[in-house]
Length: 349
Ligand code: 2P0
Image (cartoon, rainbow, N blue to C red; front, side, top):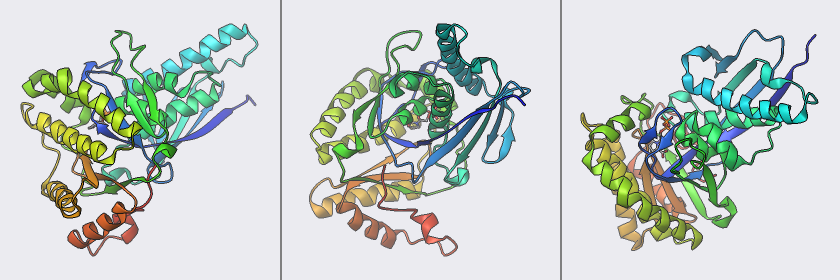
C-alpha cells in the first residue's frame, strides 16, 4: 500500500478593528487598504483541518463539517492549494530527488469549525488559515507564518491575519504580484493580557450580500470609500498601532468604534446600498456608548463585520460589568441554551 502523509492544524478567527473592505486585485486578493485585527483564542472560534496526501488518491477532495464539497467549484481553494504545492515543489527541486514528491500527490482536506457555521460568524478566515497551516506542516515548508499569510490571502483576504496571534496588521502592499501584501504581528497577546473580546450573536441568518460581492460594489460606486482609503485608514493604522504599543484602551476603543461605523457608512454609501447592522446591533452600540458615559471614560468598544453580530472589546474588570448590563438589557431567548447565547464571555484570544 502506498504511504499516506498527514498533518492536522487549528487556526482561530480574527476580528478586525480597522476593517478590510475593497480589493485592487480580486484574483490575488490584494486589498485597497491595510487593516488590523485581534486574533481570538483557538478554544472558542476556530477551524481544525487535516490534510492527507497519497499517490493512491484519485484527485483533490474536500469535506467541510462532515459534508463533501465540490473542490472544482472554488477557484480560491484551487489557488491556495496550488500556491502551497508550488512552495513544496521548490523545496523538492532543491533537495534534488531526496525529498518525498508530495507536491505531485492529490490531497484530501477535512475541515471542521468548533462553532456552528449557521451562527453567522466568519469562517473563511479561520478556514483558509487552517488549510494553509496544515499544508505547510504536511509539506514541511520553511516559510514563516508571515510569509505563509500570502498563501492564506489568496483563499480569503481576512484569512492572512489569522496566520498570526495577538494584534495583527495586514499591510496592503503596492506590488502587483502581492509579494508585499502580507500579515505581521503588531503585538503578542501577552502584551495586553487584560484585553478581552465578547461575541454577541444577534442573528444566525446568512447575510444577504456576501463580503466578496459587497466590497466590489463599494469600490465601484461609493464616493466616501475613496476618501476612506486615501486619508482615513492610513492615519488610523498609525494611531491604532500607537494605541496598542502604549496599551491606551481609550484610543484603541475610539478608533475601533469609528472604523466600524465608517465601514458601515461606506456600505450604506454603496449603490445599491448594503445594510449589515440591524436594530439590535444599533441598540447594542447605543448601550456601549451609554456604559462609557456612565463610567465617565471609554471603557468598551463595539465592532460589526458584514453582518449584525456584535463584538465587544473591553478590559477586565470592565468586561464583567458590561456583560451583566448586556444580559439585563438583552435577556436570552427562552429557547436558547445559556452557553449558546454567551458561549464564554471571559474568553478572548
Ligand atoms: C475584515 N471583513 O477586515 C472585514 C470587515 C468583513 C468586514 O474581511 O473576498 O471574507 O474572502 O477576501 O475576507 C470579510 O471579507 O473577503 C472581511 P474575501 P473576506 O475582517
